[in-house]
Amino acid sequence: MESFLIGPNTVGDIPQIDSGAFVDPSARIIGNVHISSGCYVGPQAVIRADEVDADGKVAPIIIGENSNIQDGVTIHALAGASVSIGRRCSIAHGAVIHGPCTVGDSCFIGFRSVIFSSCLEPEVFVGISAVVQSTDLPGGSLVPPSSVVLSEHDVKKTVGEITSSEREFMTEVVEMNISLTKGYKESRK
Image (cartoon, rainbow, N blue to C red):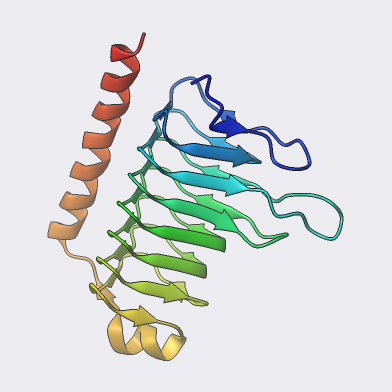
């Protein structure tokens, strides 16, 4: 994991990456980032905690145990805002998570989706290319592909409940990425 792509932000915060995590050598991890055990961070992912608030501090980006941040994902936050991603979450290829943002445990964020200034309770499934901005989603919500959710009205009109099929898929993706974490770590010893 020694890479020039993992480094400090402008105030000297250094990423904290658990030894049980795997970060692809092409990923870029900058600043006040905390990556927990069992996490997988894929190729070309960018996790950047570097915007300074009025007190000269940078809020953290925290990624919980056994979560996966797939290829080309961007995670960033406005000055003074944090991002928290719970345990066993999947952030799929090309998604953007921009703080302030909280993603609860066992959430799935689909390919190319954007989550900004929102709070997702546990077990939320966001479909491919959906946008969730400035709103809160209750646990077990299903945001259909390509949906735009910008208000409580949109939540009531657009958002449904996940089914056993989505729960099963979410579990399979997490388990596959835990396997990849172990495999990549072993192959690079």
